[in-house]
Image (cartoon, rainbow, N blue to C red; front, side):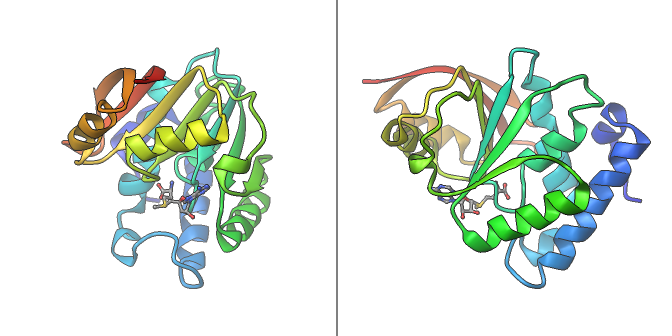
Length: 205
Ligand SMILES: C[S@@+](CC[C@H](N)C(=O)[O-])C[C@H]1O[C@@H](n2cnc3c(N)ncnc32)[C@H](O)[C@@H]1O
């Protein structure tokens, strides 16, 4: 079993086992469809799973219903679902992913892990549901485009949590040309130079 420091500090042995099952399932499925880069398979625990889990630092009891946008291989949503019990959360999680093949994978993964997660196979603009307290997303779209997509889809939120890579500064600068954004930026604990954006409100200029 591969262990990492942060995960070790927040999850039980049982949850660790489930995260390992997730990792094994994903690596096997990655032979069939492209879910993560082959080069990141070896580092899956730190690069993908721990990176996703750190978003839990910004979840609180008011986060009742969470939507993961562009889930792909299941990051961060599936990780959040697996670790939530250890951290005392009871939120409901839904995923939206436009690729049919990835949704088939996500459903098989949920069945395998015996977790109950709603999966929408759709473009997020068409989701026609608007009762999410919190939106989360990782490696989906640049911030400016992301906010435009939410606007087009008429998707409301109380909070948005985004895992952002090294381009975060440029992305924010670009987005600030079109939006007033109330955002706290936190250092990633897994990748120096990366950030977690906690967005509390946005308004188009
Ligand atoms: C680069 S992947 C990131 C996947 C995952 N979040 C991760 O961190 O590995 C982006 C995913 O968003 C999905 N996607 C792109 N546009 C979308 C849209 N408009 N609505 C829903 N899903 C979309 C793609 O099919 C893809 O699986």
